[in-house]
Length: 114
Length: 114
Image (cartoon, rainbow over all chains, first blue to last red; front, side, top):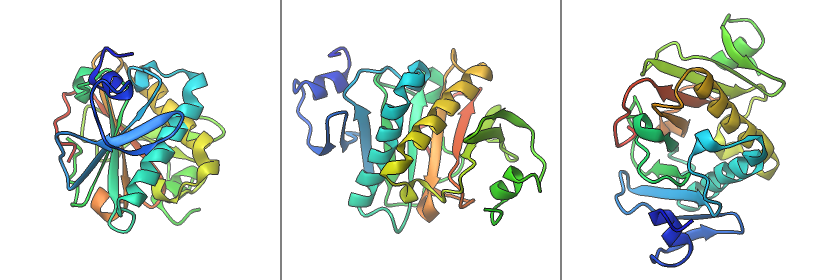
């Protein structure tokens, strides 16, 4: 659980300001933001990535996406729009082995998405 | 429901080869692929975008993400990795007003994600 930087944030070993938290998820700012608003939404459960999710994780996955929507709305992104991204493995560019969703907005996002 | 290209695909008005389909979701190749594998996962329900999702949509959202995982696995992306993206509104680059998830893999995805 504390093997990754997100695990350490969840257990309080590394400080972070949560912009959202509940029983299953927390959200905080990315330390290396790629847009005026760049938040991360992660589960408290240490699921490594989307490819490790099983059918039983669907409720958690849906909750995490809904939290993305909530934090984006609270950050004032609903009118302009935003992008939600999750990276899986090396080709995906996943840098931390703890499932996380990037919420990016406040600028026009380009296409392709990386 | 048939207002968008995805609505027309869902009702059969525009042909598409589904790589996955169930009661709630379908998946097919993006017509303008940005990676060797570029699939779209969409709900049959015409939810315009993630920002329009409400608490009651969490099960559907979780299911859609799980379908992304399944189609990525079936496309052989698990070992190399992949990226899952959803665009919301103008800044997000959303081009069709029907919720859809892009699944991209088969190459190294760059950062930032657009």
